[in-house]
Image (cartoon, rainbow, N blue to C red; front, side, top):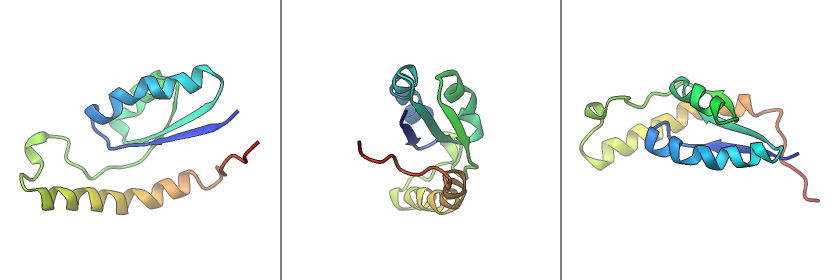
Amino acid sequence: MSHIAFFNIPGHGHVNPTLPVATEPVNRGHRVTYAVDPGFASIVDKAGAEPVVHPTSLPTDDREWPTEPAPAMRLFLDEARSVLPVLEAAYADDRPDRPT
């Protein structure tokens, strides 16, 4: 059994389309984890994947997003910096599969 890990942006337009892709390996007997913020944990769980919950600093309301590209990219950079240590700890015991 392989372990497949999904990492994505916590937004419906990013997560929802990938759920069937995450479900397929689950149906084939593989372990699938999906790193998400708390708001997506239940739909990831319903898809059969194991949610790996992390906090997010990204705005949840579209009206809170900057209208200029550079400030918006800064939000993604700040998000990556804050989430990386959490996910490194969560996946610390998961080693890559060895080629067969």
